[in-house]
Length: 134
Image: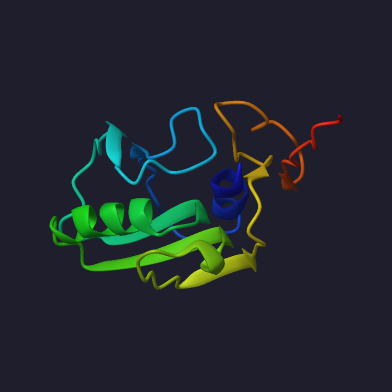
């Protein structure tokens, strides 16, 4: 959702491609192991590349992607992130364009999911843990 809203404001020719990466599976904690779910379809060598991320959390997935793209020799490589959680960072990440810094809570909505749920919420929300009554 963020990417669709963002590119409506870019007033130059562009192409969109997707790379699917995962480190969460169905849980709320990263596994620490990044896997490629869907690779690039278009070459990026010599091209201006803007990576659009919904969230930069530990930095593991983002660093994996940026390193992968750098190996393909783009003319330039920039990172735009809707949200950033620096309190959870495990590896340094430079964000060139940032929407907002988020608290250390599990975010959902506006494209962010938990086990493929809640992406369709119109706002960015966080999941609350329910206390056990007893």
